[in-house]
Amino acid sequence: MSEKLSVTLLQKELHWENPEANRTMFSKALASLQEQTDLIILPEMFPTGFSMHAEALAEPTEGPSMKWMQQQAKEFNCAVTGSVIVEDDGNFYNRLYFVFPDGSFSTYDKKHTFTLAGEHKVYSAGEKRVIVNYKGWKICPLVCYDLRFPVWARNTDDYDLLLYVANWPAKRVVAWDALLKARAIENMSYCIGVNRVGKDGNDHEYVGHSAVYDVLGERISKNWEGEFIETVTLQKQHIATLRDQLRFLQDRDAFHLD
Image 1 (cartoon, rainbow, N blue to C red):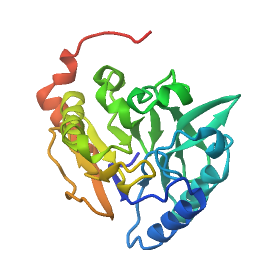
Image 2: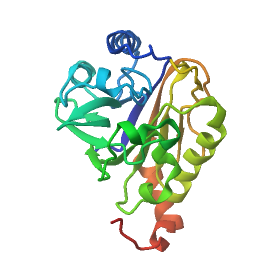
Image 3: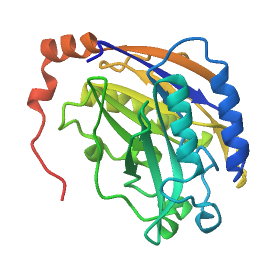
Image 4: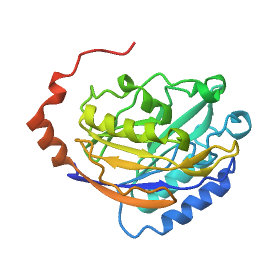
């Protein structure tokens, strides 16, 4: 078990519907890392941008982007996570991969498809939340629109870290900022959101605001709007001390999701 967990956030502009160009871009970005990290976090649909052209862009379950993630995990001896357009058994999914340093992986399919953009008409919704165990840390990975649904994120598993990968547009970035902070506070966990920047092929603008919040909702990362890479170290003792002192999670409501 590791008392500390170093996480690296990559906030980048994505090449629209060009997986090869995006993988090359992220490879170059990662090559500039100056310090060891435990977890690399990429945006939602990092190979393509938030596209509804799944039929043309979908990869198989262990396709080029997932294999690229395995290569990066091995090269940097760390975990890598981000979401990819995947076709599985005749259905399309916005699938998050959490790839471990040895190449093994866990997956989470985005539960809340973004109806405003018609995502529900193209992609099948996931049905199960996933808790990843990594270096003694319990991590709950979710995707973009999931951020608006606190019941789905509720900390019933005593996880340590809640993370969101996203393509969250500039016009609603105030909600992004507020909800990331709220999810940290209400779940007494670290909360991380990694967003993209730039414009996509639909002329939607993204300004980033990727962030790391601690158990009390204090921002412990810098406030970036352009492209950047930042590594932040999380402390297990921070979680334990405040949960023991405040005991808010002990008063949470009991419920289960059907």
